[in-house]
Image 1 (spheres, one colour):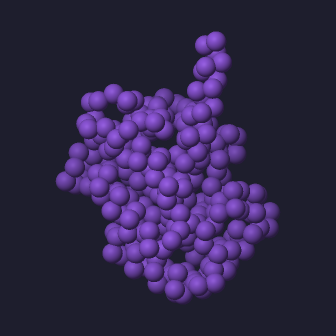
Image 2 (cartoon, rainbow, N blue to C red):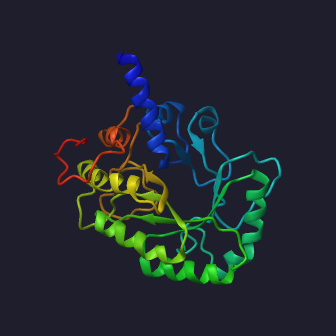
Length: 271
């Protein structure tokens, strides 16, 4: 019957959407619930979840953001731990590869305390040359380290740009976590309509691309960006504080695993 069909469809969507996440801090429970039909995980650039993260069924992924490492044995149990946030740029973790490698045993201890299945590398900014150089030096300096996947960020505005970024990291031979992405290039339309166009182009590819293990949209509206990239800043928020999905959030939730890459943003979401 109809209810059985809806149950099957919902179960299928959740299983297929297990890659899909959201990067945003201080989320309200209503926001998390609005995204939960097809967004399976979240993180807040911190080691501990906020109150809403604890209450939500959405999976929380902790992060060791920078050089101050809290390796308390009572920090909870999680499936994954994310490494330093953009150590390759000054305004974030700001560590050279050798400093990060020296500190990595402490990160491994945090991962052990948390019982994580996947320990993710430091997350690289979207500058391909800077990021791949940093990561290569880090992995060379940390040859006996536990690093189960590599994290990267992307603010390219085309599928070709994102694909080129991902291809540049294949040389390291590990699964990739795209832990921040949105369209933030001054040469493109960064309005919500521009974000919708970009999202429809890239999310189906991320779903089917084997090397991508997880991905998380950088969900901030135009007036919320702490570190501006474009002017105006991208209007990339998925959900409002009252739990109402933005038009972009509606697309993110409804893009199914079988959606193919579409020619333009006015086309239907589904094939």
